[in-house]
Image (cartoon, rainbow, N blue to C red):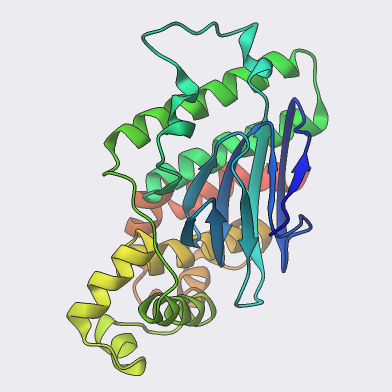
Length: 283
């Protein structure tokens, strides 16, 4: 099967909401790639491994590894893609034998689900990179290198805590879990329970919980909360809805519960998040 080679930029980063990828189905390049799925669900293939990727998960792809993205659901997804060459960092951060920050890319641990606080931290880091890359203020290249190195340190530490590399093959239960993920992505605002969803898809609750975690990297509750809070963040910064209305709109029946989960994931209360982020949205 043919694979396409692309010369990697010294540094490139983009954030887009898409229905399909503009890249050929199988390709590789001479740079390091970091792929973060903000929202949605896709399949991602790296060499002989396949991953079912849901919003809040990070993928790292080594130089010359053949990879492709598949969006079987045909629903929109939002992703951040960062591509860079090792030379981009060399003049600022020399390496030594005891610690090589890029060794994570050859660990075989391509896939890493992130908890709520990790997602919030990573997304803020990406936002800073994108702003620097687009606006290019004085010293932006040095700040980009600093931000990238901070991200790479996080990835290095994260991969060191992950279990031995495993991958998810394409089997019936994976497809069933992905049907459930699609369902949750579109019905997150409705009341959802493990018993209700597992029953709807004809899986026992215990087996459902086990397979959902194994295939997505998240528990059912973690994933549902992440989807709801991501939507709440957009509503808080992009609308004038009252916070109580935002909570109800994304599926929380209790303002107290909404506030607690929102702060657990973002580190801020809904009001503080709106006050902190809305001015930037209106620039």
